[in-house]
Length: 198
Image 1 (tube, rainbow, N blue to C red):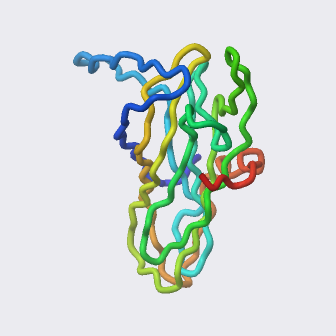
Image 2: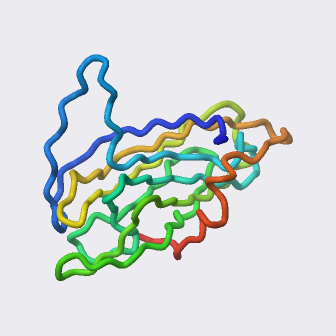
């Protein structure tokens, strides 16, 4: 069972050109009583402990889950015509972040070009270090997300400044904390490629 972490994904999508870019029309809002359709790509954030303790190192996982038939571009994609998947940690006083570690992408030929992609699910890991002076309470960790979902024939509207918000509890120094979301941070999920600087 996943931990208590509450996740909100906020969109601020901006139109931009990309390879095979052809935005699909926006669907109308669901009628009263009609179930809202799930987004093509779900982005959620998870913490590897039930609380961040001052002085400790912790990890955040940003998980992209794509509908069947969709992919997003790898962080190691080449060229200016694609929108690479990118996660930017928030600036929070008392927390230092390492550069995100991205999963290995797969190489796939589409038409005359070859791209590096993520399909199915992709997990980005970000390590943080809490200062010993970090005050107990709660903090909203808003990770800025950029990606574009595509099929093999066309692309959906890009997301350039979405946010995955993680509401984390800050424990007191010396308090006991427990591991959380073990299935998300399993070795098979975090077997990642080298960190991407851009």
